[in-house]
Amino acid sequence: MEADPNNRTLTITSTTDENVCFSDVTTVVKKWMIDFSFVSLCQFFKEGKFEEFNRTISTLETIIDGTPRLNTEQRQKRQICGFLARIMHGKHLDVSFDRDERLSPLMSAVGVWASQEETVADVTLFQHITNLLYVQSVAVCLEKGNSVMASSALKWLEEECEIPQNLGIKLSLIVSKRDTYHPFLLTFGWNRLLENIQTFLDRFLENHPSDFLLQAATKVVKAGQETGDDSETREASYTTSQSSEHSKVNQETSVLMRPKKKKLLSTRNIHPWKPESGKKPALTVMRKGGMVFHSLSLCQDVQCI
Image 1 (cartoon, rainbow, N blue to C red):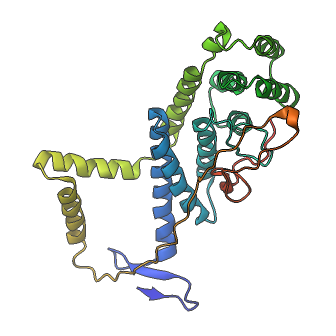
Image 2 (image 1 turned 180 degrees about the horizontal axis):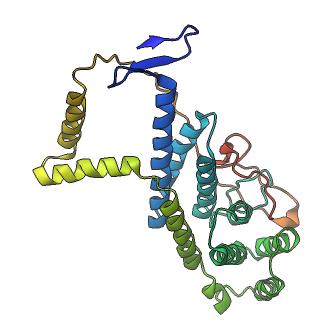
Image 3 (image 1 turned 180 degrees about the vertical axis):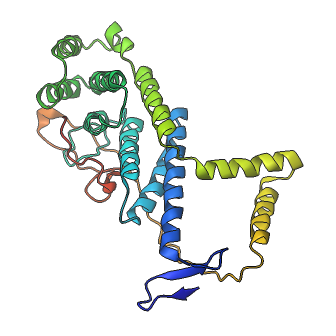
C-alpha cells in the first residue's frame, strides 16, 4: 500500500496486480453499507421493530455523513428513510422533525411523501398513501385525546396541502364530534397506512435491489447449516477461504481509525404543542437543524406540493 504524492490517497494491490485507489474501494464499500442499512430499515419497519429501526437509522446517518457525494438512487433512499422515520414516530406527538415544531411527525411525513411522487410508479398507490397520511395526521391527535391539536392539524392540511374538499369536510365533522371510533377513521386506519407503505417499499426494492451484502451473508449461513458449523466458525471459514484465493498476492493492511461515537436520536419528553397557548415546545429530538435523521437534509421545513 502506498500514498500518492499529496498523501491523500492510499492504494492497495488487487488480485490482478494492479494498483487500485483506496478511496474508490471505500466508495464501493460505502454503497454496499448504505444498501444493507436501507434494506434492514425496510425490514425493521415491516416488522415494527422500533429500537432496531432507530439504531440502524443512526448507523446509516453516520455513513451518509461521511459520503460527500450521493448518486440519485442513494438520495432517493435517504429521503425514503426520512419518511419511514416520521412514520415510525407517527404516534409520538412530542417529537418534532422540523424547525416548525408545531408539525407532528405525520404532518412532516406528508411533505416528505409529496416529494416522492416521481419515485412511485403507481399513481393510485401514491394518492392512496397521501390520503391515509391526511386522515392519520388528524386521527392520531384524536386518539391521543388532543382535539385542539387535531383541529390545528386539519387547518394546516387545508391551508398548506391539496387535501380533497370532501375529505376535509368529513374530517372536520369527525373532529367537531371528537369521534375517535368513526367508521371513516377505521376504514382509513393506521394499519392500512402501514400496509400500503410496505407495498411501496416492496416495489421500490424490486426496482432498486439493495441486497448484495444480504445475499453474501445468506450464503455463509446456508453453508454453515449444511456443515453444522456455528456462526463464528462459518464466518472464519468463509474469511479463510476468501483469503486463500489471494494467497499468491502480496497484500498490505491498513488500520483505520474508528470515529468517535455519536449519540443520535436522543429524545426527551416535552409537553405537546398547544395552539391556544401560542407557546412552542422547548424541544428537541434533534441534531443539526432540529430533526431526527434530518441532518441528512431530509426535507426540512417542507411544504406540501
